[in-house]
Length: 507
Image 1: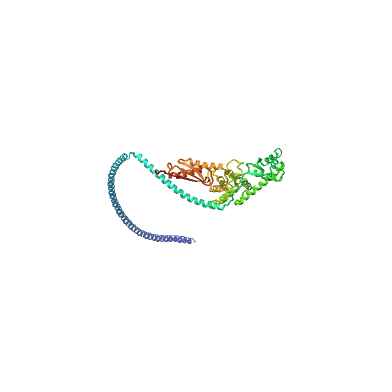
Image 2 (image 1 turned 90 degrees about the horizontal axis):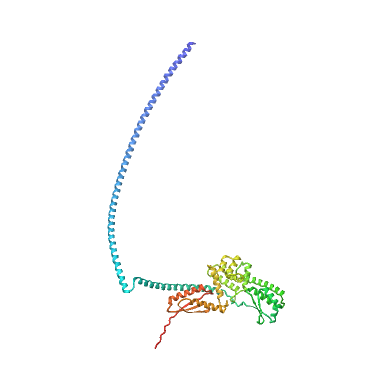
């Protein structure tokens, strides 16, 4: 058994030695293979290094050649630039030389011109002195004379030009105005007003006067107290005159007095009863007249209070012309003129109808009736354009709108047409006298005549003081002063007459 163990140990030792040597052989083989691989790799790396070096050398050669070529090109370009700069410098030098030569020539020429100017000035002064000696006046006097002559000539030319322009504008304006006014008046065929402002009540006999007065005057006192009207009972046969500032009160008194006379029962209680009934009748008539006037004029939407004020104009007269009828005419004319001028027809129509409503209350409120009427229209919610047109129709405001101008023109047409109004002789004579005084206030006027009921003023001037052009200016100045100082309907023609008479005798 021991031997077996020894054999196993020897075998194991031999196996270990054999394995060691086997491994050494294998390791040697691997080392040699690795050496061969390393030699091969080293050889390949050397070859690759040589190739890279060759390529780097070739690239360096190419870059060097390119740099040299670029350097040569830049040197050649720099040389070309130097040549151009040199040529420009030479050209500039030549130009500077030319400018210097011209400058010297100009300086010489300037000196020559200055010398010539001095000689001319000396000659001019000598000529002026000789002319002053010949003309016996100085240069300033001659200049003043020349300026005066030029001023006169310019004024004459300006006057002629103004005359031509005025004539042309007047022809055009007159033609257009005639066309518009003729169309408006032709379409407004109103009757001539014939009412009067005198309230006279006829009596059946003179005994009725005593009954109206009553015992100790109680009847007449009761009637005057109830109506606010003064009864004038005088020696005029079979008539009683009613006097009151308010036309509505006067109408109430007229109706009440007429009923009392017809009834025959005249005492204070009956008087108060009849006056109350008459007031109701007049108020109803006023409302009806206002509604009818608005309907005829084609104005819609007026409040009842405004219709009542409008109806009161039925009993108001201006120079014999019924104010309500006049308001209707103005409304018709204003609407037609506005249509011709492309203005607001509704505003012109409404403002024309209401333009005189201030006259219905002007005895109760202080101020011009145009401004009173405008205030009433504004208070009763009329439009601003209507209120402005009412206020402007007599030129009592600072400015005027197209509707205000239309209403003013229509108002003048209605009041100035033949038969529309009556004018007292005293007022008529005063108006003509004022017209003549305006013309006589100008220098050079010899005498003045107002003709055609004040529609034309003829002015005779002194021919030795006023020439033809001055006559033109005089006519324009007189017309302007008339517009500024006088109030008149329509227009006034100003005619200036200049007459030269030469008288001699044959002996």
